[in-house]
Picture 1 (cartoon, helix red, strand yellow):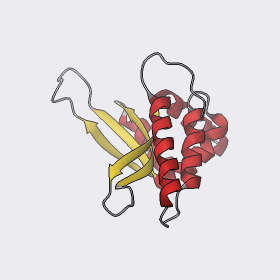
Picture 2 (tube, rainbow, N blue to C red):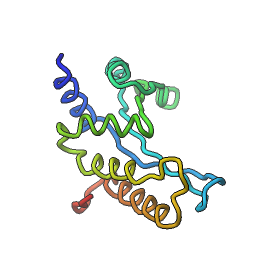
Picture 3 (cartoon, helix red, strand yellow):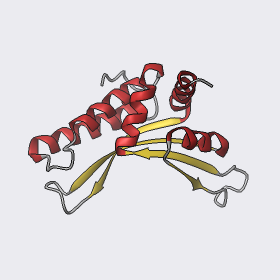
Length: 149
C-alpha cells in the first residue's frame, strides 16, 4: 500500500469504528482541578486490524473487555493514541475523513490551543471545558440535531 492508501484506509477505520475524544480527569495540580487530554481510539473484536493501526501509527493495543461477562460475545480490543501523537494522526488522515471530520477539526483546535506545558490561565481553562462539552455533544449516541464544530 502507498502512504496515501494507508491514510485513506485508516480514515475509513476511524469513520466506522473509531472515536475522537477530549477526556477530562481530576488533577489537583491545575487551577481548575481538571485536566483535559486528546484521545483517539478504535475498538473492534478483530485485533489484527488494531495491531495494523499500531504498526502504522504507534500507540497502544489492549483488551478492552473480555467475554467473561457475556460468554457468547467475542473479546473487544482497543487501539489508542494520546496527546500529540493523536493530533498528528488526525492531521494526517483529515483529508480522507467523511463522518468524523467535525470531531477531528475540534480535536486539532483543542490540541493547538492547549498550553504547551504552560499554565493555561482562566481563559484557556474555560476554552478547554467548552471544547470538552462540544466534543461530548458531537459524540453523543442516538438521534440528534446537526452540531457544527
